[in-house]
Length: 378
Image (cartoon, one colour):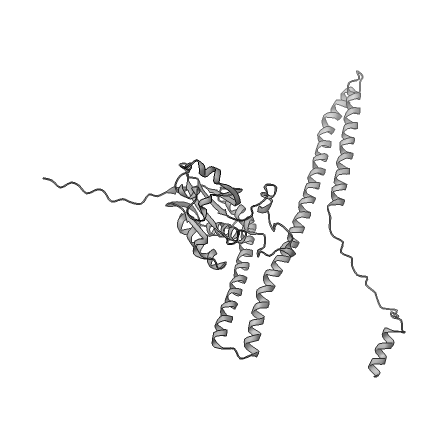
C-alpha cells in the first residue's frame, strides 16, 4: 500500500521540480532532409551570378568602345574578368550538382542500412529461436535434422551477405591486381547458374545456358562476381516462377557479349542508368519484400568497366514458344543470326529485362576433329 500511495502522489499532485544542478536536455527533432533549401539557394546564386556577369560585361564593353585613353584598360578588364565570372558560375553549378548527388547518396545509404539491418537480423533471430528450442526442449532426431538444415540456410544467407559486402569493398577500394587467365565461359556460366539455383531453391532448368566454346582472358574472381550478381538479380526480380536465359556470342573482333534475359516486370527506361548506382534499390526499403543490399548491379558495372567492357540494359523479348521450346535468341550461340521465321518477330513481346555485357579478349576454340582416314590402297 505504501508503494501504491507513493506512486499516486508522484503521478498525481506533486509537480516535478528539477534540482539546481540538473541540466534538462530537450529532445532533438529530426526533420526529414529535403533538397528544397540547397536547390533554392543554388538557383538564386546562379541567377545573381548571371545578372552580375551580364551587367559587368555590358558596362565594360560600353567603356571599351569609347575612343579615349581608358578604352584599352576596359578591354583588358573584359578579357581578364569575363573568364573569372564564367568560372564562378561554373563553380556554383558544380557545387549545386555535387550537393544533389551527396543528398541522393545519403538517402541511398540510409536505405542500405535498413536493408542490411534486416538481412542481418532475420537470420540471427531465426538461429536464436531454433537454438533456444533445441536447448530448452526435448527435440526428436527428425526435428533436429530439420532445424539443422534451416540453421544452415540462415548461415549461408549471412555468408552470402558478408561476401557481397566484401566484394563491394574490394571493388570500391580498387588497386588490387588479379591474375588473368583463359577461362571457359560456358564453365563459368554453368557454375554460377547452378549456384544461384541452389541458393534460391529453384530447379536447375530455371536458368538455361547457351554458350559455345568461348574463352575469355580475364581474372576468374571478377568474372564469377560479375555473372553471379547478374544471375542472382535476374532470378530475384524474375517472374513467378522465374525463368532466366543466358546467351553468349563472340564476334570476329574478339568481343564477347553475354545476354542475361529474365521474365520479370522490367525496368522503366528512365531508371535504367540509375539502377547501376551504389546502394540503389527501386522503391521504399521498408516496403520491399526482395532481399538485397543494392550493390549487385553496382558491382556489375564497376567490374565490367575494369575489364574494359561495356554494359547495356533493355527490354527483354520472349517468344511465344518460350514455355515449350527454345527462343529465337538461343538458336544463335556462336554468331548473331536473324530468325528464320518472320512471324516469330511479331510474336516477340517485351517482357522482363535483358542485360548485355560485352567483354574484350574473347575467342572461340573449335573442338579438335580427327583427320579423315586415308583410303586403303588397292
